[in-house]
Image (cartoon, rainbow, N blue to C red; front, side):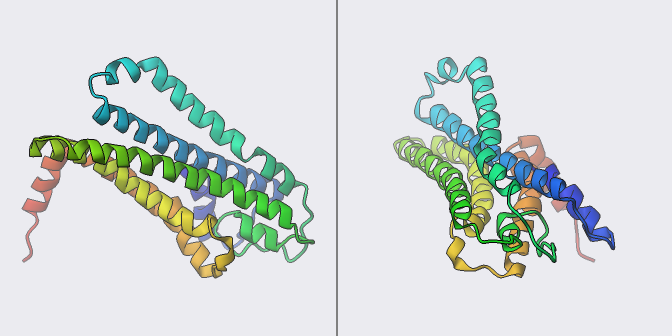
Length: 239
């Protein structure tokens, strides 16, 4: 997901000639949205896994088997790469007029449509519907899964058991919030009229900041990682 945008973005930041070919722009658009969609589907699969682990712990080993995990991962990748095939086919056939300058850090739908020789409201609406379905659909699925998890956790009589269940889901919920928040702002409300600066800052957040923090968030579930972090923070002193 990150590799579709960050390398070219860094090259443009360090270079005086900030250019990208038309084919390169279309390919970046496709892989950026396809891998982003796959990320949404993978987060849904993780929410489903947490739901089974907490709400059906006795049946979990029989349901979430190795073959099922493989099928879920393959389905996430396949659905992600098929999701935006039709919009990208339409956009690649559009005519673009000068000055051919994309006022953005990546090839995003908004700046691309702004460069089109003729308005294409049907294609724009189709892209909006596609983006909204994958973002809102995934978020609602995850929200529903964790609502059932919350109800199950509240029925646990032991405070230790409730704390353990919440810690199991905490890292995933944090990642979900950081990922879906900026995406919803950018792609689920096209009539809001974001400024170019707002688009760039929001895009940088979900293309660079969120992926940067994901490994740290998930690693903090590890006891050895927590102990090492406490040791480092404990050894730091202000002179």
